Length: 134
Ligand SMILES: [Zn+2]
Image 1 (cartoon, protein in one colour):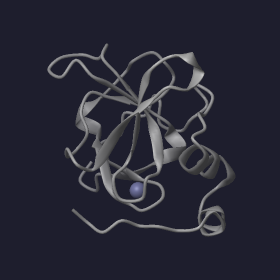
Image 2 (cartoon, protein in one colour):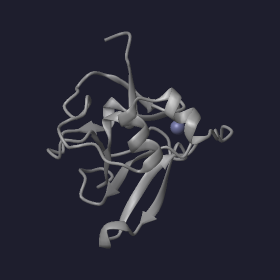
Image 3 (cartoon, helix red, strand yellow):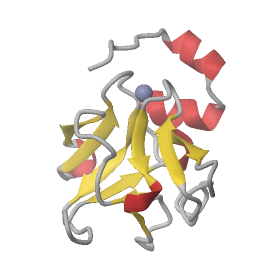
Image 4 (cartoon, helix red, strand yellow):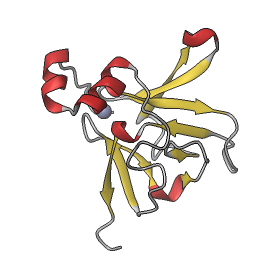
């Protein structure tokens, strides 16, 4: 696996937009239907906004109706890491980038087959590199 990327809060702040910084470094959540990618159907690879690591493919994106970009599988196991999140009096599974620990969103067990998973991501955590062939 690639080396970890570690930066100070100040460095991230300088690199990222305010919204991206709040979500990825401060575990925020963007308002549903507010993001750039929730209804995006363009083909390509969704990369980490912080470090550029490829995270999800448009091939596994589906319309969850939640207003957040949703995927049923990460591009590669190991590119995203999961962690139990006990905030807000419920147990959820938090998802972050394995390279820079950027907070991406949460994963739930009510997704479509074949995985049954729903990776509920924030648009501002992602950067879509559109398929040049499309
Ligand atoms: Zn990253």
